Image 1 (cartoon, rainbow, N blue to C red):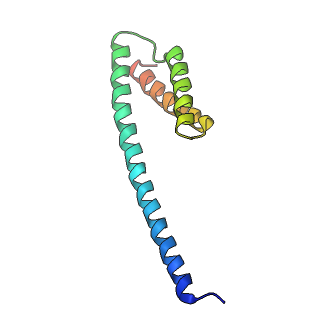
Image 2 (cartoon, one colour):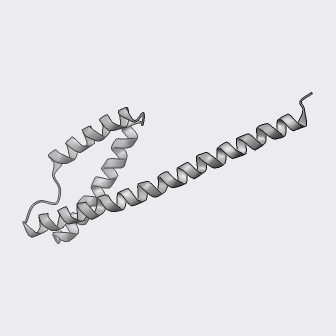
Image 3 (spheres, rainbow, N blue to C red):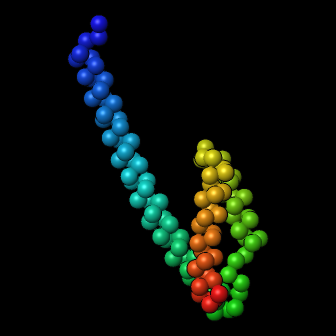
Length: 105
């Protein structure tokens, strides 16, 4: 038979660890959002520059290089490279959409 005190100690430690993990996740989520916000500030500046200079809203060669780079970084970070690729493709499509709006397309 298991000692109820031992079971309570295990449950209390598990709850504390769960709380720590969730607090870390919350901090990382905030970092992601602020980082994306900062990234989009720069991509919007790029979009305005492209529109002012009548450059195309997308740059497929750069986008391809960025996807390759992100896949490499994902592997280094022990993150599924396919997930990272989908994530960056989503971001790139949003950036292009913003650039097209600036170009009146």
